[in-house]
Length: 385
Image 1: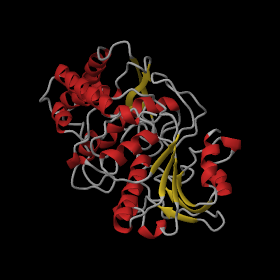
Image 2 (image 1 turned 90 degrees about the vertical axis):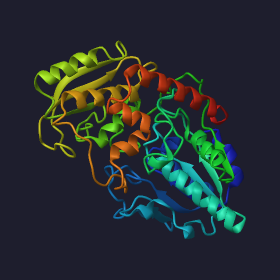
Image 3 (image 1 turned 45 degrees about the vertical axis):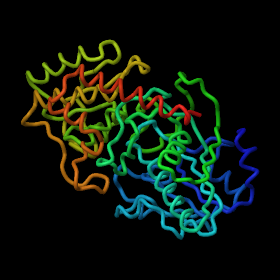
Image 4 (image 1 turned 90 degrees about the horizontal axis):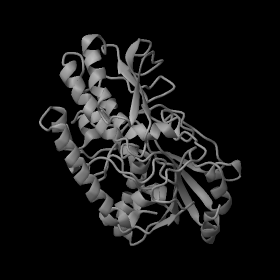
């Protein structure tokens, strides 16, 4: 692992780390074990789902406990929104904050939002005291490559599942996205990105997969997640409780002539880029637990051409037209926010939300996405590693 030659220069520093089981591989060890041999590792910051991805989504990690010598465990996904921000005392006597955790390429995925909150706190600390720990990002490939999808998240919709200005599928590595935050938001933290490998810009990486969270079981899941995560804001099952979450989806009410019409409409959308396999499934937990659902398995046949976000936006629009009395967007608390429905926080753009209610045509949506994706691709050129 070439990056070890670089980080050995910091040997002996007092360090904290944000990590989980996805940072695994060198010498068949978890990377925090390696760092504990190089640094004086004081603190492990726990992201959502826990250190070993033990917990389902939106489940507090307050009850988790681990024994790693004298290391302090700081849970950054508790029962209150305030738990998402690291306490100031967790940086006391710390020289270095290490970020070594895999991302899946979508802005909803919370690990890099947690890293961003750490970055913000270091920025405040530096402004107040004149100094702050170095922010060291152990970079890793984006599992779905450099392709981008979507539109910038508008500030009014910013939440734990979306940082302002970022597209739904951002096309950056963890180091690239965190460097973008640091420069764009003028945080002025000392960010050091250590790449672990070089990849051709159009290459989709292939590597041994350690699930970063319970419902991203395979690399294939990542290709559909930029769109399918929107189902979390609806009364459709996104496949939690099955072996193919986000690839399997549906609901008990998808039946009758309306379902046949839905099948027909979806058969012409992005033709040749995916297959929809009709099926029935029985979630073992989460939405419709132990209840038969009618739905689909989404099988992407051309991942470099398939647009997951457009697929789901189009799909939801059809559901609104064909199942107006059964299909619904969920209300209530979602990722600590109760002032806006989950679908608004996930979509994050008033133009896209208007599309869902029929205020824009499909061709207008395509043009809009083409423009926003082009603008984003230009903006992030300096942050591609």
